[in-house]
Image 1 (tube, rainbow, N blue to C red):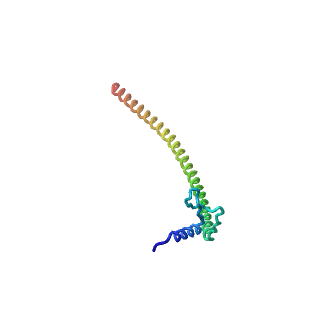
Image 2 (cartoon, one colour):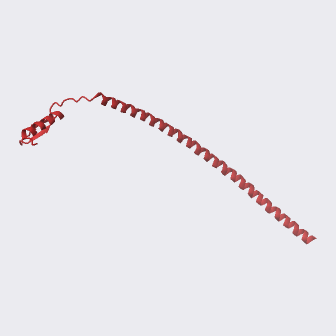
Image 3 (cartoon, one colour):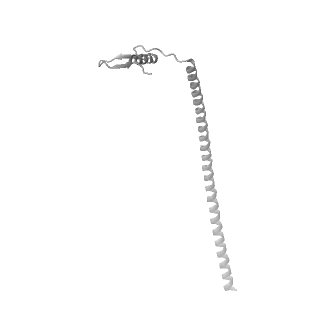
Length: 130
């Protein structure tokens, strides 16, 4: 089935009016399509507004949850800082304890060295005297 030029033109005009456009003649004589000066106001269905409201409520709930998660992360950060401080205190305490143990071992080493030296001197003296 072939359509005549006039039938095609009527179909094109009907489609253009349906989507809110008008056909105009340009200065060069070539037909063009343009928006009308007073475009019709489009009324969206109520389902659209309802879905937009639900989306906005969900975004608000998500933002609240993100804020709660941020607060939890801040609390966790504070706990880790406290743990770090405790570990630093423990390391400082252990360093002091090891210093004290090192001093005790040094004193014991000197005492044992002096004791062996005294025993050696006493044995040498007895060997020469006896």
